[in-house]
Image: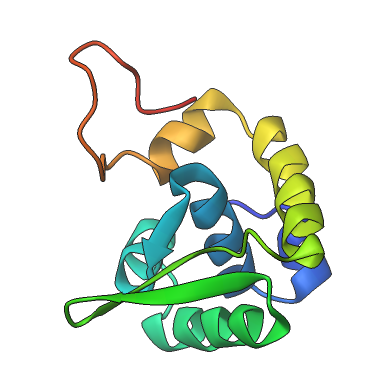
Length: 115
């Protein structure tokens, strides 16, 4: 597991995992974030609840799964996403490939997973 300034700013691996996952995929759910970053599901869910209560992210139900995404109406969300983008852009390609190796949406045949 990597450690970035997000972990230092928000006080834990779960917050870092949630923010980086939402930045990379656009939307995600608790179990996927937990699996990708090897952090506890309970910690990820608590962090998702905190970000949702703050208005930074929103939640929608897809069947029995709660899917979280950035809140397009929140100015806090826009700034948090911008900060996360700075950290994300600073990650090495190897780190991004290790963290985000699973494709979650269909892609063109030769399109890389990493942006």
